[in-house]
Image (tube, rainbow, N blue to C red; front, side, top):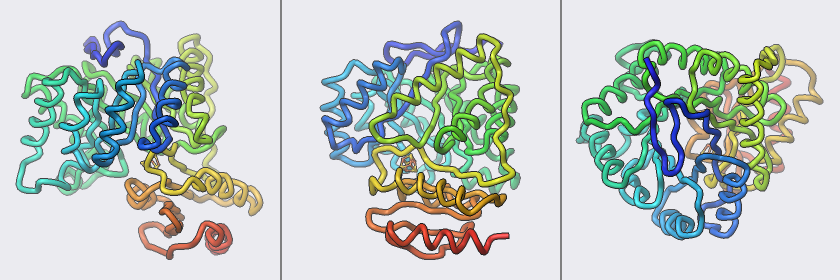
Length: 366
Ligand code: SF4
């Protein structure tokens, strides 16, 4: 079946359109000048869409200001507060909701009622929607019903697509992201078998720092794009705040290599440390996050090979959940770093104390 065409402001994805590369601003959204500069640098690097993080009323005011000053197609990620859709829709071309976060607010309303509300807002403001499923935040009702996490993810995505069908809305795409490229390949292939008409947004979430982050992303894209899977891509790399346009250059390069038949066929090496780190965004609570991610990498290089996963996340929104599956997890608060072993908390440490504490835990790990 042919992939449906979806219009997002001045760009189209799906149909016969080329794969669109997109990215996200990492600046604080309320730092208006810096965010404007970053949006424009990502846009000028060739992005079709630039994402901005919006969490509150002041962010919405900043978004309004930004909208008046940039040509870029903008998208907002609704995270846990999907009610913000109403406030942001007049200023963006697309919004993303996470089916795994809809249960948090307005508990008396059904998921179906909430999605219908979101669809009506999108229709009113001519916005596209992304149904953004994330393996770190699967809808609890689906986990309970299916038991198996992969099945819950797929069924949740298909259910939301069916809701769009029911409400007569076609201007949407789906993403199913994980930090493990093999999961991204498996789940996107499975979804595509069920709904090959829906454009997919591909990405390996929290891929981490280059070069590992680039290898993980290539691994996923090389196994999906040749099969016609993927209408738009995001490369999520942990990079210095002023260099986010690099994600567009890397994304363009990967897509053009694949289309030219140039494959690296490189699998991410999981025999040693797997450092998962988020690409950072406006929600980062302390700018020391990027330096911290680099220090974790240096520490592991110093300590020598160990087969373990360490997650380093920039904020409290996704940090607590996205570190659960790692052997050791760090998520950053304004003044301290929260340290975890699996789902269990070890404690919180200052940015100066955390590396020695991490070293000690790594040494204990077998
Ligand atoms: S973990 Fe937090 S700071 Fe990092 S990209 Fe996700 S939302 Fe942004």
